[in-house]
Image 1 (cartoon, rainbow, N blue to C red):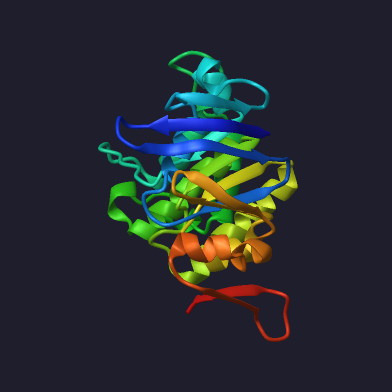
Image 2 (image 1 turned 90 degrees about the vertical axis):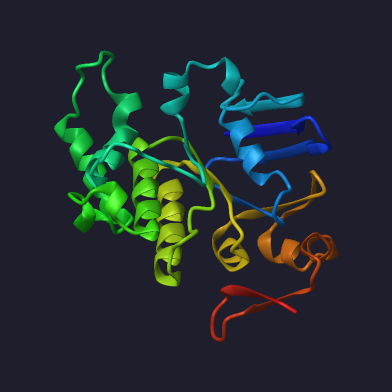
Length: 257
């Protein structure tokens, strides 16, 4: 699905990313973690073709995202950034239906089909925003907006989903629901997801692999529990992490100490 090979990038000062490499395979949820300001969002923007690497290469489905037509790329890759602003008073349903735009017939007058509406309803149901369908997007809470935007990404039905802090502003129950829906989405459609998150517990519980960024580099990557127990991860977060399992289950949890 995705291969990032020794990518370098900077904004004119010290490098933000240096020789960063990672891969994402089909049906895989990979979480990128690390302290603030280590280039996690920049990495997603490079993968989405919004920035050009200054060294190395990015390949989505074997192709450079910068060289693909945006409409073609949008049929296979969706990107949910941290900040998403709309100035027009769209309803939640209209925002979610924007995810179907890359799949519509060419032409400004192409309207959504019944199939588009059905897929949007299914995505809103999966993200628990169906009852908000007719509400204005700018009048719902921050957490509800995040869930509506995730529904838009699901409605787009791409092979690779890039999510930047998808559970920010969400209460714990809805944060778990979002990751459960994400795992179901990848499993049901043979899709993949690359997720930037600061929630180590959700990353430990739901990801197939963790990638830790620190000092502009990938310092460790691998199975979540192994990565969270590694000294490189403690050094990246400047604190020791206690990793255990919930009583009577194999569900991991993480507590800084």
